[in-house]
Image (cartoon, helix red, strand yellow):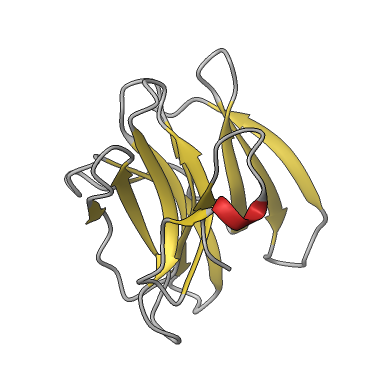
Length: 152
């Protein structure tokens, strides 16, 4: 899958691929000012998913996360930072996605969920809270539930 853009009303022949240099890209979200897009992408097949930003005027792409684990489902926060899901392994060797925040320059990554749950598909609510799909993975697997969290 590639991220594309086309003017409203144009046909698919005029569509521009914004992530042509990526093997795969997903979960695009436009910043509040409309100037920047955040997305998760893989440069090469088999690479871990990382978080990237793109200036929509210049198409300059900047890698935000540099992790050996998959980082997916980015969403903009009101302060201009990014929330996303990252695959973690805990002390019991359980693997699941936890929610993190990070600055657009890759600074100050902070984990904000700590329960043994699969926290994915983050999106921002109008009041500044993060809506996330969360599924318990320990001690037994549960069903997905939606949680509304404060980013702090």
